[in-house]
Image (cartoon, rainbow, N blue to C red; front, side):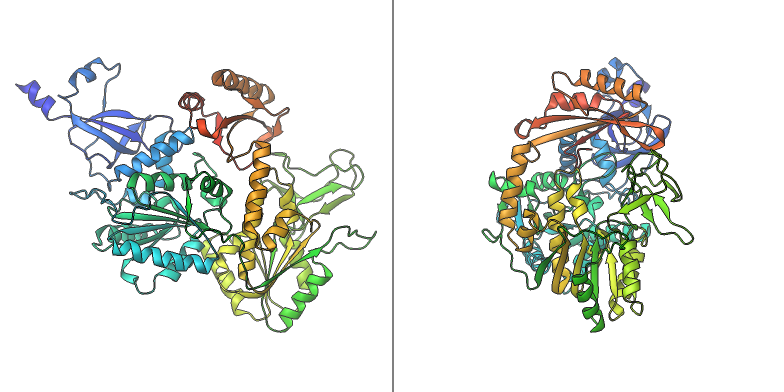
Length: 638
């Protein structure tokens, strides 16, 4: 019968739409072609075509009754050749990650299915994942050590995986880290090592993916996080280098942490997961104490660095009236000159860009803020005149203005920025090459690489850098100085001490002879612990403080933010409060300024670690409209 032929030649296709802001878990379509589960196809959603992951495909005859009962007519998927198939283990890992962060699975897939992967054509025969033949290391393991020691550990891990016919995916937070680790490991296994990151052209990425998928021998893939979805059938080991880096956390929707995705993927694959850094993330140390993680080398939490480290105390120093403020102390300045005069190179770390990060009225004390978002503006040096730049929203205006509160012209700058340090260096060392590496001066990976190469080539040169430069500094220099770090201590981030510990450790590794740190807080525990290499004490102190304050990892914090007029944000927050009952949403006492003259308001939920993810609360959070920004375990409470 004609009708029977029609039913038999049609298929229903269940698809997860892949989109950054999607809240839809799954859509159904009909097709004249059968598509393999795990393949990527283009599907129509709200008037436009977007990628979709096939999670089910069957004959319309088998689901005829369900189709007839449906309240809507199924749309058709055009005939097409699907893209490369994704491993079902990765899909399950993405689903678990999405559940934890209260987002749709398609939003997670959007972040970790790069366009270059979506354009690789699907193979006729899909090879299922091969279970690993290793020694049963299922529990994630921690390795803490200096960068060179970590590379040696990776080399051993790759050899063990290859011997067991398994491939290795080594994930790094930045392009510079990818190049560094790749170059350190490629020797001797050049034919089986592949490098993937966003600075490669789309064509080069596609060629690398096609080659590594076709290679019969186990491979080592060194990549940035977006390539975690590579469907290599024999993936046995996942390594997360610099696992404490905050860059693993997404800064845009969906707000997910790739470290959790890596954890879930390794669990689904039944393979190994190594988390490596120095110092380790506090969350990882806590999970080791609970028995959820193991450590490769136990008991070695006091690291012995080959270089000297010293503090330059500036506590109690006051600037005499009419005497110019100096960012570089006399002691550090003398060491810079001595090193430069002998032909040695110097790296100076500065926490902030610009001339000075804060400008205050000298008469009434009012802070000069951004007209758009209300954040403190930073004074920058221009070619003709100085200007204020907001590092939060990017708004810029000239610096010729009066105090907004009292109309005084006496605006004074405070704090230390890269441009202020550069100005002092050019006065003190007029015959030396001075380089400044920050997001203002290097807009791309290639630009940063060129600047660091020029710095290493110039004897006696000085590099003024923010945190951006650290992955590029792969060679030692005699002297590393920390000009400003104190401003970080005042940030409203519950994990800022982790960042400070990581930054100081990496700077010390760059120093060949000496690390010198200027500070007005020489007695701060974080400084004494890290400078002494006593990381076990740092872990204990940080865990004790977080437990007392109810911060992660002892609880899960859910932050809900809204932006709009004063009436809008109050109304929306009240709607959220009612939607989330019986869970208690606590809001800030007052709104904060936001871009374009709007206001923002934040609310928080605290959930016990043992009860998260909570299916009921997760469903309520996901039911909130896109006007709400939901962040699980945010870095900042502001």
